[in-house]
Image (cartoon, rainbow, N blue to C red; front, side, top):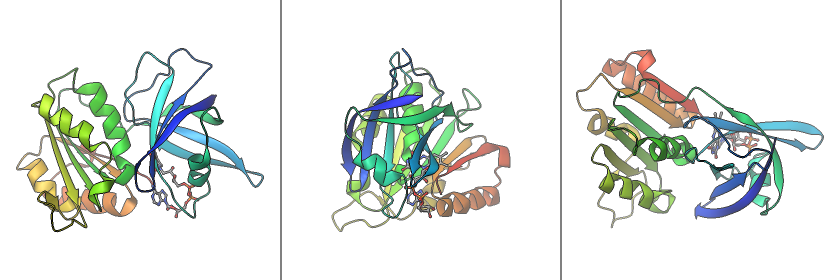
Length: 229
Ligand SMILES: Cc1cc2nc3c(=O)[nH]c(=O)nc-3n(C[C@H](O)[C@H](O)[C@H](O)COP(=O)(O)OP(=O)(O)OC[C@H]3O[C@@H](n4cnc5c(N)ncnc54)[C@H](O)[C@@H]3O)c2cc1C
């Protein structure tokens, strides 16, 4: 199916938020946490890349993505060059990185654009349930905290949501959390072992946090992850 770009906006250095619509359907259906695959012919080869949907399902045919530019990459630079009205080929949403146990408390750990599926899940779920969620979001600099105002607003409105942003390269003026997400796992999880933990970002972080969680006593089935590279 074809998705047409409605608009794209820079939301952090080298990160853009994209709004697409799918003209051939009235409503674009997916489960929060799923991804779309984007196909494009580049130098005679069909290139396919997955992108987590960053928006909640709605009654419309729109969906949103959050992408960082991989300078040497094949597809992301092409997506960054797209202008409103241009189209790309996508495959319908897929993926198992979705809430498994309705009602069970969940901790989300994201780095960089790994925030995308959690924005989708939180936008869809916070209104619907009193299921507690904690989001640990790690980036280098404050300007990379994508959707920060949205998550802060969610934390103010919903007592069952905690937002724990952390900067690995904070300025002297930063009074919030610092260091990698690994440093804040205990604050997010405390002594609980009856939670599901969702990890999303690059392999280095995901593998490291999985190992820490296993050492903490988590069962493999309680750890869900999506690796971007
Ligand atoms: C299920 C899934 C969901 C994904 N969702 C998103 C998303 O929501 N947003 C997003 O920006 N990316 C996402 N990705 C990564 C995306 O599919 C591409 O890998 C990425 O855009 C790079 O593609 P490329 O063709 O530009 O670079 P390529 O030519 O494929 O690769 C260039 C190099 O960049 C590395 N790389 C891959 N992804 C990243 C990254 N995000 N940051 C830095 N280096 C990277 C690769 O390891 C590779 O060595 C997702 C990947 C998967 C598997």
